[in-house]
Image 1 (cartoon, rainbow, N blue to C red):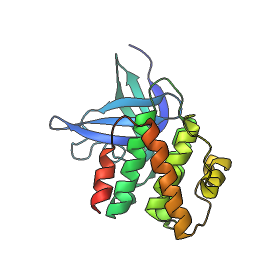
Image 2: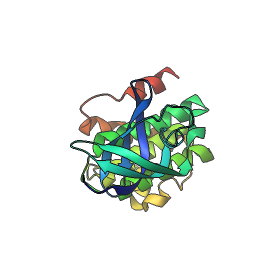
Image 3: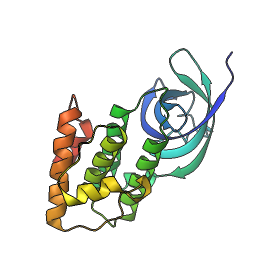
Image 4: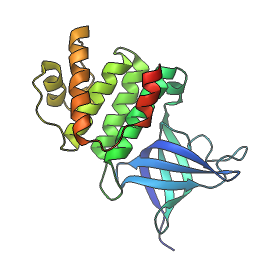
Amino acid sequence: MQDEQSVRGIVLSVSLLGEYDKRMVVLTEQMGKITIFANGARRKNSRFGAAAQSFTLGRFTVRPGRQSYTLSEASIEQSFLDLSKEMEQYASASYCCELMDYFTREGVGGRDELNLLYVAFRALLEGRLSPGVIRSAYAIKLLDVEGEMELPEQALAQYILSRPIGGTFSFKATEQAEAELAAVAKKALARVLDYPLRSEAILGSL
């Protein structure tokens, strides 16, 4: 049996398995995106119950398998479940996770990606910027991290690209600048995405 490993990451998505288990996709700073099975996580008083939730930042002790991992221990560093209380915040957080899931993979460290997702969640909760402009700035910065962003002409997009990840959302903008930023993000994503994001359909219905 391979040794257990401890990883720090954010839960991108959770799906239910059987009567009591969960399957989690977790973005980790050490191993990139991995799949973790949390056996018994849906049982009452499960020690995994609180950590096996979307948007949770935590430390996970996992046992390697052939193509996935099994959860042995979990502790929460920060829960972002408050993002689920308001529909546009929830859909925006889901959009950030889905876009992150598209670009990340196992075996490639995800430190920058994890930091970007964390500051996006913080920005959504703070509410200083609208969810829409946060999504645009997030997409542009993520594309830059992944080496997929072409230099834009729009001034706000250039500013975002010039900032460290922790400063991605440290700006103010007029409605016109926000609309221009959204157009930049939409065009850049259309160039690289192979399929539409499910969360975009939800956002479009709001």
